[in-house]
Length: 199
Image (cartoon, rainbow, N blue to C red):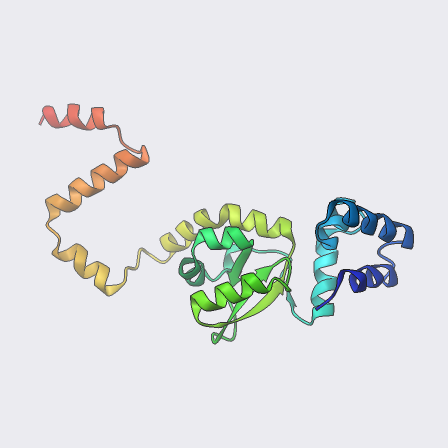
């Protein structure tokens, strides 16, 4: 686990910051608190992507600076829930080793997030460092990306859901569909009733 002091010396040693910039960042941290990683990025001393790569190498974990729909594990996103992903600012990624969960996160030392998600999915979690900016962008787009992934899957339904739909009376399904469309704002109740009165 890289401490703030070790991170500061690493940044100076790599020539990414000067000693004066490090002192300013540490003074800022001492007076206002916060994570040194966020502070050096906010002060403009180091780019978020450079810092993510450096921390990943130092912590000996994977780096995933760009998060696109093709690297996200949507099944695990559903298992964890969007609220939890937003709370911890993390996203499950597809892992070549399906026995563990690869988790994109800005802070690989956030043990609370790791332990909570491990408990929820009953798998070990391997952190993959990314930038806060990439995480926020991906979390903002996650619902839409999941919808698109479902559409690409051709609307494949689990067997039990398909059976339930097949055994539900058609008139009940149609009513449910119409109510759903009205609730989504895709259909006007007034127009539907006006049209029905003409039949």
